[in-house]
Amino acid sequence: MNHQPMDLPPGPELIASVVAAYERRSEFHGRDDQTAYRLFHGYAEGRPGLTIDRLGEVALITHKVDVEEDLAAISKTLLELHPFASVVAKADRYVSWNSTALSVRALHGELPSDSFEVVDQGLRFWISLHTRKHSGLFLDARPARGWLRKNSYDRRILNLFAFTGSLGVAALAGGAKSVVHVDSKANPLDIARENHLLNDLRVDPRDFLVGNVYQHLPHAQRAKLRFDGIVLDPPPRVPNRMARRRPQGQDYGQFVKLVAPLMAPEGWLLCFFHRFDRSRKAFEQEVLEHAGVSLEPIWRGTSGEDFPEHDLERKLRLTAFVRR
Ligand SMILES: C[S@@+](CC[C@H](N)C(=O)[O-])C[C@H]1O[C@@H](n2cnc3c(N)ncnc32)[C@H](O)[C@@H]1O
Image (cartoon, rainbow, N blue to C red; front, side, top):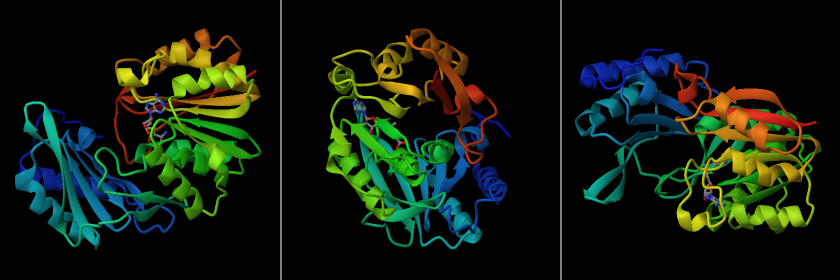
């Protein structure tokens, strides 16, 4: 994979990179069971700060850098490659020294005003382009959803930092007995409920817990709850107000002390490592040293081929451990 981090290619070179990236993803195009994937991963494909995602019939261009002059040409190129209903540009722009404003606008077609559906490995999920941070489905977690679908049969799953519940939906689609989602925000959990319904999965209101994970876990320990699978996907950093009880963010050494007691024998723990300042080896070591029970890594994964990156420590790293 061509890596040209800080050289900002001029217009025609950027367009050529977008076309080459589209062609590299030929196995994704034209499939009914996969309508959401990354089309251009600028960090490794020639333009850091610029990404393009396919979300159903929408091409979403997200930029943190100024590509204003190239947007029309990118949009035209995308439409030559695929008959997208809309091409949308999304940017968080600085409007003063310390505040940003979200800008979402259609470069072609209509700007979808409501949520719309996409398909990931045959499962359906809601997307919204009007949320500040994220449209609702983490595309780089596709391999994690695939693993969960294959490894959740008949298990009771705890999905921590659940967001819109896509990981739990994958587990239920794979035959999980139950999934409890926990997130500090009510809105994503509402969407998680809708994602269950979209896939004809049962919804039990007790399975959607709004609250601080760090405060829930000690309660769950005291109640002697046990799970056969735990998904742990903490954000890299947590605002102080959210982490009155430590640890903050991806402090796995602390975290695993809170979750390991909830693991049933032969239960697994699927960890997402996002921080680029630490290696997978260091993260895993931390988990194994601090668990207080015997854990063994059973699977290592990362994001899919639509997130090319030759430095594997700069990608999402996934490790599943089983309790022996
Ligand atoms: C990276 S997203 C998780 C993505 C999710 N695993 C998925 O694949 O869709 C992080 C989520 O953690 C939630 N969150 C952050 N701090 C939290 C806390 N202390 N307790 C509970 N949820 C928290 C955020 O609201 C956000 O939805």
